[in-house]
Image (cartoon, rainbow, N blue to C red; front, side, top):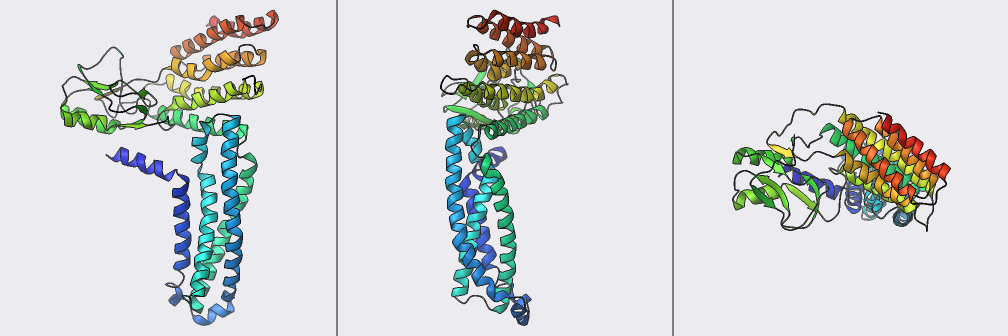
Length: 416
């Protein structure tokens, strides 16, 4: 199954050690390729270009890059711990997948192994004068690459583990997930009516979260079985052994059931790729932690509210447009519900920040801003969250004047 293979490759490529190993192997290969290219270089040019100094350069690189790589790794681990303690533990998944940090660490390790391989090759007499010139030229390229990476790494270091950087990372990821769903709102299928189901269900054989759904394979199976497929779950749903995944009108045999079941990629934890709600949940967790008595940082919660508005504004545009023609017309997918998005984004913040005037006022302003951007269901979701937040405010010790200012903002939604 192409989708599952693509998912597995993407999952492995995001692991730190895979990228570091690849770049390290590239560094070793760069050192080994010098001698095969030596016949292309006239021997007398090697002495004129100072190729004999390559040994000293490689020794300097080997001694310094090992220390830099060790320092970079310890810095990454410290930043992960700092981000998890100041925001939410769910942020570490994205931090570990950050390609910039992985490329920096991989470049330093690869440069170290390149210099080590060059020193060993020169000590073993593998390079003649022409080979040393090729190695010298390759070393200059590697040094330029290392300097550029090191300058970029210095620019990144002050931001690692900071709350602002974590919020920006989550916001970017959540917006990208909603943008992807914006382009493909029903994963290529048709909108499913919750009341319409097939007579026979295919059940899950494991517990976990739906990370992705291979709708293309489901469409092929639907055509082969001559029956529509009605999905009971969507990416991000939690399933357990025996819970329904989908339903069909024709009783599937064991082979077809297994093939349909394999179209659902199940992971122990939620992921962001096909699950746009997860980014909103993680953003809300950062705001809720900032509002806890131990942290007491309403400014971060207000910043999170502003980011939630930016993310949900992406989906507001989709609500005003017609759905595209389905690529997989025999697969019926549950649509993304605006009420669920608003609950993920604002319910927890309203609960934790009910007694903070500045947070509740900003919450109502953000809901009002979103109210003006979407369709009827989007506006209704904003109204519902606004009403719930007002009820929570009523049970706190806010001043009457403060409640009235909050209520005045919320009342603007009732004028439409």
